[in-house]
Each structure stands twice: as structure tokens, then as C-alpha cells.
Length: 456
Image (cartoon, rainbow, N blue to C red; front, top):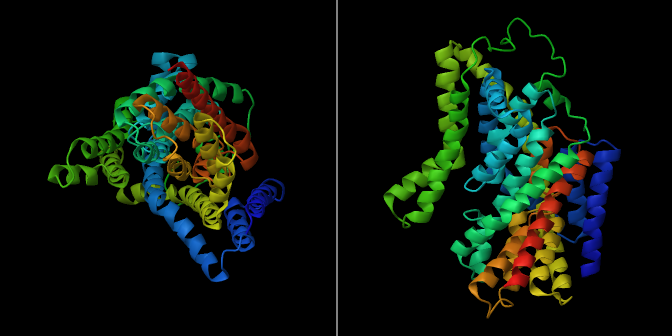
């Protein structure tokens, strides 16, 4: 099939998906599966392979996020139900003042995002976002949008995350220089992201009923006789305890990351720390601590504790299913050859190296959804073109590639669905906020990178 036809099919698929979700109000999970099936057939994927591709797309995403989303949701529910999130928010707001709280949380998200994967960190911090939103009586978007933006920025640009590390290997750039220059560029990019998110938040966006219920802005149904009470907040946990429950899993994940970097492969301590530092294990440890400190020590019965944890799963299931369906759509686009066709078109244009790295990566990101795949593919395409460059130049090409993978997060990106579902946004409002923010961040990172390139 010709390159033009593949690109037209991909464009038609995205437009059909937006029409179904925004105009026809089809549930996103169903719409993503229907469009994925149609695009797969139109792109020429053999009928006997279509369901295998779709299943692989679902499994590839859910294999990495289902456990994390489930455990993270239960941990968040425990913290929220005990009144801990509001306790922390009140203490934090009193110490900093309302005007500085969002900036301080964005800075904290920047730091935490360096060692922790974007989706893991965002899910762990979700109850804190809700807690601050309740106390401030504002939309969680006010806190969540800038925090998610800076976390994704460092995720795509800085080691030890897989995209930049793999790109550095393909392009031959030094990890040390990539870290140093990457942090130096990510700082002003993060500031720009904070300001852009603040600008976008001038408008009030309608929230989903699930988020409104969590914020207690919509009246919940009264409990029946056999249901747990709505709240156990008569004696809420301290801000210090809640902070520890949030920081401990992140610190454990960081420990596993650092050990994998500093210790030699095969080292017994490295293997143990890598296991403990796996996000799922770290979250299980945090959930066990929450069970003891928030439930057992505060007099919750085992049945009541189980009910509180179980109450988190229906909402988590919606996020999981929609995220998995986003992975299906992305996998279909990859297998159809859309990304490869687009890359071939762009490599023949003859752009200068830095703009070429950014534009190819950005186009691949937009066409198939995965930032890591976009970064890796671009790195492979440019691996021959970078011969003869010095260490700093190689680092800048790598960063341009990484920032290309940051922009244009939209309906074929599983991260788009995580952010929009957790923050209660519709697809249309997600495109107006999250897609715009990620694109501004990506373009800003590229422009800073290109400026450094022109100066050396």
C-alpha cells in the first residue's frame, strides 16, 4: 500500500474516533476498539492477524499498567477515605499559602518524575491532587495539569527513563552529558509548562461524574445498611504519615533504579533491590503500610477495610480499559506501517539535523501514540547521520529526538487516557488542555535545544 494511502487511513481513523467520542458520545473504550478494527482492515493487515494485533496492543499496555493502576487506586482510596489527603493539603496550604502551592507541587513533581515513570508517579500522586482540589475548592486540573506536564517532560528527556537511554545508545551520546544538559533544558521548559497550564486553567472545564463524586461535589447515593460508612475522618492521619505513604513507594522505586545503574549485572544485591524497586512491589509495600497505619491502628474492621479498597476498583477499571484500548489503536497504527511511512517521507525532505530529529520524532509520536517508540525509531533512522559529531552535538540531537516524543499526545496515546480520566476531562477538553500543553512543552524543549546547538 502506498505511503499516501496509509497516511490518509491513519488520519481518517483519528477523525472518525474523535467524531464518535465527541459528537456521537460513544464510550471511548468501544470507540477505540471499533476504529482500531476498521483501520486494521483498511490498512491491509490480514484478517487472520487483526485480532492478534489488537490483543497484543491491549496486552502490551495492560501488562505494564494494570497492576500499577489497581494498587495505586486502592492506596489512593485508603488515603482519601481516611481524610489523609485533605489533612496533607490543609497543612501544605497553611505553610505555603494558596498562591505558592501549585508551583511547589509542580516542582515536587519535576523532582519525583526523574526516577519514577510518568504513569506510576502520576497515579501515586492522584489522591494528593484530589486532596488539594477539595481543600482549595477548585478543579483537580489546577494542580494535576502542570504536575503531569513536568513529569512527562522529564520522563521523555532524562535518564534513567527508557526512551532517552535507548536513544543515547543508538546515537552514541554520553549519558552523563545527556543528564546534565537535559536537566538544564528541562528546568526552563518546566517553567513554561507551569505558566501555560496556568493560562489554560483560566477556563473552567466540566468534570466527569466519577471525579465529581470523589471531590464530593456531586451528591452520592445514601449507603444501604450493609455498606461501609461514607467516611472515617473523625481522627484523620497526620500530614507526615500521609507524606510518608506517598514518598515511601517512590523512594523504593528510586532505590531500585539507582541500584540498577550503580551495581554490576548479576550482583545479588542489585537483583534484590531491582525486585523490591519494581513499581508493583513498591506499591504493595505502601498498601501494606496503609493497611496497618490507616486501617488497623484506627480501628477499621477487616470487612470495612476490604470494602474501602474494593470501592477503588470500579473507577480504576474504567481507566484500565480505556488505557488498554488506546494501546490497541496505537499497536494497529504501528503494525500497519503508518509510522514507518511517515518517517520515510520526512527523511527525504532534507531538513537540518536538529529540526529533522525533532520533526520526525514528533510526527511518529502523533501517528502511533508511543513516545518511546517515536524516540527509538527516530534514533535508529538518524544513527548514520550523526557520525562525526562531538559529544555535545550528539547529546543535543538526542534531546531534540526526545522532545519530539513529548508533543502531540492525543487519542492514540495511552497516557492521554490516563491523564484525562484521572482529571475528569472529556476527550474534547483533553485535546484543548493536555494535547496543547504537551505540544508546547515539546516545542519549547526543541527550541532551547536548537539554541544551544547554534551557540556551540
